Image: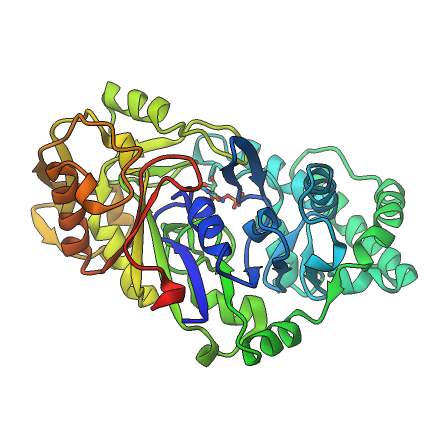
Length: 431
Ligand code: IMP
């Protein structure tokens, strides 16, 4: 396959960054196609830690082209800061290595203000958003009042649209959300300063990608978040405001469906989520605390502690079916070392009825009694394993059960945080 999409099968934070970084070595182009800086990848390269929020992980390999597609919502200040930070550290040396779609939408300070004020108002019913303005920015896109990078080309017309938006948003902020209004002149001035820096990255990204694919280049599409946070297929309303599955590649990067070779799902060997919403396999005992510490389960974007649960094969099957996944990369297997017994959720029981799939009445997710299969654990350190036969028999058995219960081929297994701490069974670019 020359074109591969990487998609999270849980609630994000599956460790996609590490797998994308690993696959980026074999790719020519790496593309973000949805979401914004609500996503974050933490990557450890040669002992150096990088957090990428907007720029695809290809930036950590020399000479790879990074594309930010039209389906994303981008905070321009955060983007410039991320570019500057990477360039200071010797990455993304040449500006031509970053291509930004004219049609990507901008996240403006009023989006952040609305997101945060709404969440504060919701109190106990809050979604638990990152507070980075993602939902309000997508709302404006759909309402056709959003500002795109294309608008920066003609700054006079940009300022006019910005002022019109801010007049309306300030009314909403002041009257309904009882929050502080935004100063239009301050934002216009900030954008005037950023504009020149941003314009040089603008590109007709769908045309660029279509040419790259026609030339036989390898293209990696880097999904953000996970299928359970998908606006249509996740645990609505406790989701993000974009489609997070492979179908978003076509709209969000502007490529034809025939041009996507396959989809690699990424799942963690257990489950986590940040923010509110149902979580059938959540662990409420002290074990959650030790897994959180061992797995460093704190949000990369916000630092919030993540909720922890057992691997949920019902969720995984849902994501794998929806995305027609070619294979699965299971990450952070090493974090389960020392836990005995281990559990995998194989089905749900709701009011005495057994479900093999997520119930169509999603509100029932709040009432799930998970059906668990117990498996024996292992105590050996597995961080240096680079082949399946270097794993303890119980770890291999755990992997076999995940693969069988999810009905998907296991393509990779993560055994540690470092770039090379991965067992590669099958590389999608080589299949
Ligand atoms: P928003 O995307 O900031 O609107 O947040 C909506 C929900 O998605 C919240 O529960 C967030 O914690 C969650 N979320 C958004 N992006 C990520 C991610 O990359 N990883 C994990 N959770 C995320």
